[in-house]
Length: 171
Image 1 (cartoon, rainbow, N blue to C red):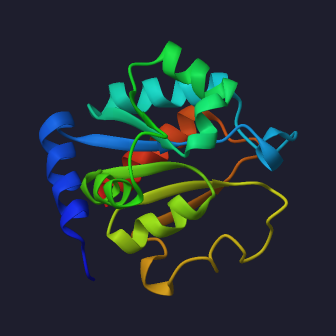
Image 2: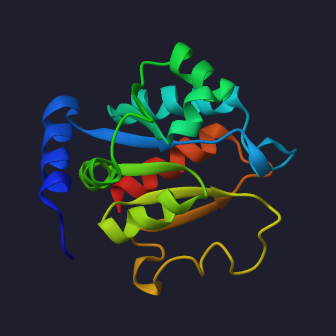
Image 3: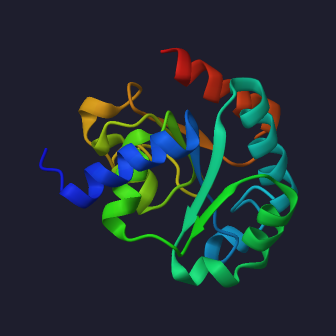
């Protein structure tokens, strides 16, 4: 895999600044704002705090410029001790940040689909309307259940999800 100097520098800088860290990525707009389409903001806050406490990981939250105005993201930032990189870093820096993370956790999006290809364990939450193999067909077969893990959102309990993070970190 070809890695840009900016990506490599961002990875080393992130590890030096944050130690062991987890990258979180959530959206509370679009289809994620529909019932069954997302975990709630309160659940995301609980998950961030729980994962950080259980595994000693610094929580880092990322997103695009459009996420800066998302009231859900704002609430998360106000209620947690997340490192806020929402809308603040380039794509190359984001890829470097992901490469240095212990795990990426969040809603199904391009970021969570690219993360395993960057060599980072990824736990992604899919909407229940995506049945069958859809959640698995978005990544290379080589990363399934080794770097890329899936859970459906409906009925998902945050303690279960935090446990899944631990299981993935251990494998």
